[in-house]
View 1 (cartoon, rainbow over the protein chains, first blue to last red):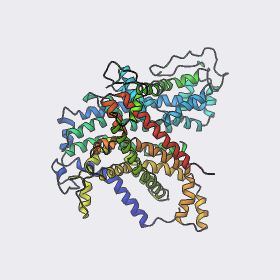
View 2: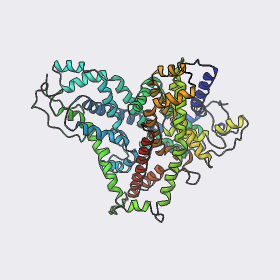
View 3: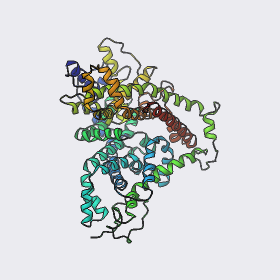
View 4: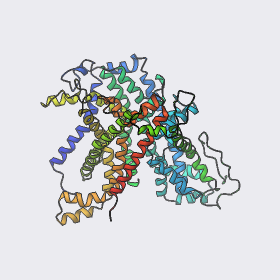
Length: 275
Length: 322
């Protein structure tokens, strides 16, 4: 694979770039069109008349679709979820990587096995459990159940196994408690893994669709993706408003992604190689 | 400084207060603290795992053995009746369930081959050495970081028969510009598969890329010295070298495609007719909209059994052959 990269190679890359970026760009442009221009035949590519009307409608004009509220709900839920995942998974992953105790193998195997169980079988029973807890139609329905996934524990365990033991040994000899060692020596050295897991959990929670549309009911409690699907029903012909909503959901994740794309991609890649 | 066990900082609600270790003075027993220390580290996760994975795993089976209507006070035990009904063509759910299973199976069949092959080609392309490699990798992966709601809404508009930019583009280059991409077959399936490929292909490509990085470059150098063509290199070095990764990609892609929900929900609304109403749409609609959870749980277990069988068959077929 060390042949020179000719014009054909670069042309292929250019075409693929247009295919992957083009649709997103067209949606962004559509969100700045007037309602009638978005429905013109043949369609225009660049807006003939630029307008912020769609964003004005989206943010300020429609009390039945509190989009800014949905945005805040999504942000708070994804942040709390991500913090919870990182906390519980790093602790559990550390115990499974570094400590010896009874039933360790069985506990680890039990957790890993659930990686292979399709998520949809938990939909109905978890709905009932949330009902029992009184968490339906609350933010806890979004934050907590997903944090029980096996991936984070597996991911953190793999990372801790690869970490050199010397630092912990010396902390222990200095008389630090296990928890203190974990917090002040292990976690600071686990930064890349923690960032990766935090970002992946945030993205997954921000993007989740099937769960919020069924466990949230009140319009003001929806997340952005769940709200967007209502918006699609409410603005069947006002495409710029729906596309502005899609952009509102897309831009934060694209921004995060552009800053930490290496962590995201390497986190994903490691799931395949080690899995 | 205390060397005995400390409590975790933020015990998750429901975590059992494990008996703290006064008995061990740390240092002597094992690597860390008292023998309760590992369990304290595990407790928050295990509490969540118990409540939201283990209990629901069992509860789901229990529900499926009842005529479980969430809105009714009585949930009579019916044994295996919900399962029997799924295989009885005169039952109420038979047709919609198997229609959904058929739609899901069809979507798996038309999407998975492309999602296995195209990302491999993309990964081979990106595995070359060239300036901007990381940048292009990031670009091709970008759609995957977006949620299905964003993808669904944007493609619903782009594929609109009258005002959509897909038909607009086709018209601009002189091709038919009136295809009903979302409301007629086979175009609705082509659209859903195409959107899914566009959305998730970067994910598989990144997994392949990691696998390609593990194939020693000198294998290719030796092959080139022997005059092996590009195709022979792919056939005899790349694909065998990627075998474990390939198994992972095939199985996870089948499972992902079998879970298809949002694309149909937002782009075709299950139509035209019920043709793109997938099994997950049938299950969630019955269980979480109509609240008939017993039948819906039975359906979800039948689907899960099918998927496990398919995963096993693939694992067996793709394993290293002696």
